[in-house]
Amino acid sequence: MKKYNVAVVGANGAVGEEILTILQEIDFPLNTLVPLASARSLGKTVEFNDEQLPIIELTHDVFEKYDVEIALFSAGGSVSAEYAPSAVKAGAVVIDNTSH
Image 1: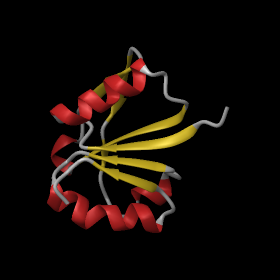
Image 2: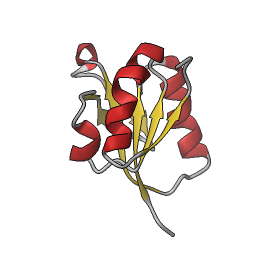
Image 3: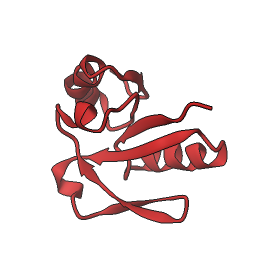
Image 4: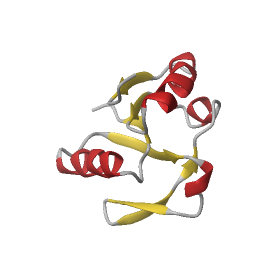
């Protein structure tokens, strides 16, 4: 089965944490999980499969850097408006759970 590089934008927010929980519950075929948030969240972690994963700063080039194939956005409409085009440009499928 193919495994995917998945980014969760807003990973340490309430919706982002729920997305992580669901990915665990359904045993989504992950190659790499990339938890993304703003620079204010650097130094924080999120729990996934009993591991603490460091938050990575959301930038326009992070999707290409981590070869993201699926980007799940839950950080607000303005964040999606700014960064979703960069994810698409890097070749990711974007699923946006915001008002954008």
